[in-house]
Image (cartoon, rainbow, N blue to C red):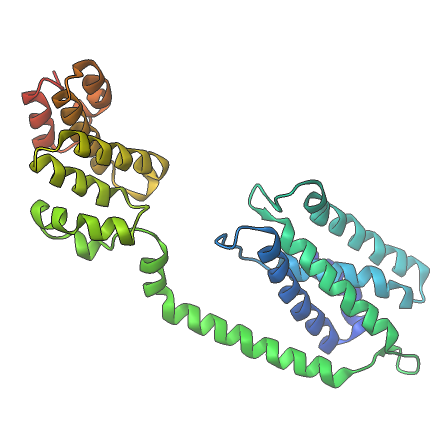
Length: 286
């Protein structure tokens, strides 16, 4: 909606080439602003940085509109949208508030403002349009190729990217039996430290070697990671993890804590029945 509103006034003033070129320049500025003000690992997606650049450029080149009513209207639309889009970036050290990337807004606005100042300096009084049309066309072409190439690369790499960047063990590697999984646990922990299943199987391996304290430590680590990312795993895994940890805690001699850990899982419909039976045999489940 904002792109349509500001474009209705700005595109006739600048022409198609410079309108797209400023969008492209502001998009790059928005990406740089996001990288500068946010954690480098933060993923930010959207066109709001580019639109912020168009709003900033609209404020600067609005002086080129002869009609005072039309000029004020474009200035009001641009200012009312741009100010709340960039203001939070000034009042907090973090540019990411509630999933809004204000760093991208700021970077895009700065890039769009610089481009607009250059346009004003090269404005053609005869054509009443900005000069340097050929550089604008070149920018548009480069932007089009870059966007098309990015979409193609994203589509081609999507399956591998999902596996590599999700931080989770690929399901294809989890199809073996428990003993095989326990043997791979150390490798999984090193490669997928945010997947609780690596720590879970490492805990089972230590438990099999009668290292109860070590098993308890690994299972508690697994439960901590699972609790923070429950939506990524089946409920059955969570119940299984809690019940095995409860059994280990009971082996450490703390029956009260063991029962508290496994209480919700003992009668859960999603909990594996075989694990519930193991917990019952150790007195953890009634």
